[in-house]
Length: 207
Length: 207
DNA sequence: GACGATCAATTCACTCTATGCCATATGTGG
DNA sequence: CCACATATGGCATAGAGTGAATTGATCGTC
Image (cartoon, rainbow over all chains, first blue to last red; front, side, top):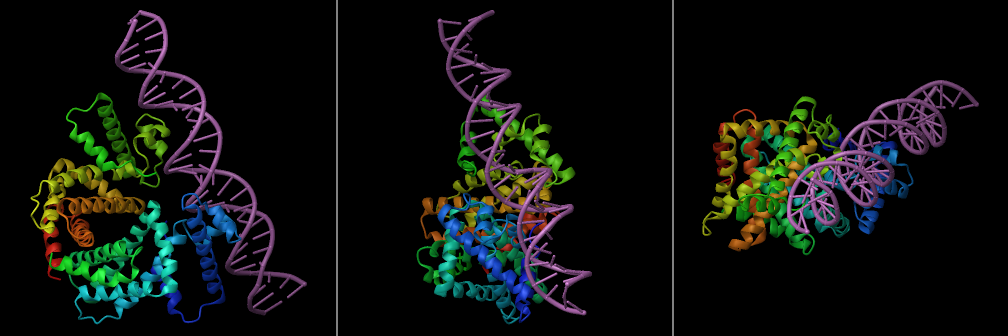
């Protein structure tokens, strides 16, 4: 019942150079919905905002909202799918003979870049603050992260071979480092994200 | 709105040697509920089982069910809180000057022990199979794991000092190794859990 | 043994998410 | 202008979760 393969779906959207009018319309409406939702969530909190309010704010019925996002949390957590897409693309462009540890570190440069852009950063920090304040959204985020780790692991195993257990463990370990760095730096000193990631990675490697 | 500090609460229950009749009753009822739920979930699946059915099966109303478990998934995922308690106890008994990496590895012996006991293993494998088959429960499990990692990190930082970022990263990395080992071994070859954990840890350390 | 207090359980009503179904509107191409 | 596909809205429903008031059982006290 959960989202119809977000990554492959979105990837298709990105791969096709010029999207059809219909698809562009769809993306625009989704953007509208997230914008409205973000505003309401920041003002009233996630739990105190109903889907009806979001839908009404974007000028549509609740039923239509669920045609664009299959769950209330998707409207906010779905953003990560797009970043995840970029990360996977970045990972695939890495040289095949590179140690996966380094490939993964390189993959996460996408996130660092993302937060380096002031435009995106402001938006993302707002999202992060809502997620941090809402257990339910934190759960959704963790679920997405888990899904993402699985996809990355499968990709690496398929393209480079190797033991699934080992690859999965390394993917999880690197992700844990990034996550720790995110938690520590993001709200107060987002510029330090990169160094924090490297510090965490170094700590794990010679722990 | 989420669970009233499961760990501290349960710890209190365990610390106090003889529980009051009321509390023992409460624990017994919770056990009944999980037993009924487990049976229904295995037969019909998690999504196809309503809270009403579980409550009726245990001879109570839905409202009363929610007095014992604050959410439907708690009835199944809540088991991990107890193991988590044992793990934290095991961690606290570790020598203070031991490298945290080793302390954490020792802490996870509790899980290995748990699956070594044929009695508990059968029960836990049933739970695991349901969780594996149900995305929603997987999400709940991830949330519990995240909470647990936070508690462990805070404990280590408080008792041994050190950089939060580093401790959190190491905790996450070790947990990721255990999780990978669990995923690979549990359903098919549970006896190999210990070796798999060590293999994953070794792989991360000299990746 | 009766009485009153206390706490658990039940009942009822309600909100909100999510989904299926069918009618209707909004285009789009012939 | 019409037929057709698709997007949308409205309606109905199931199920999770919660609050409030009521009933009921248990226990100490006299």
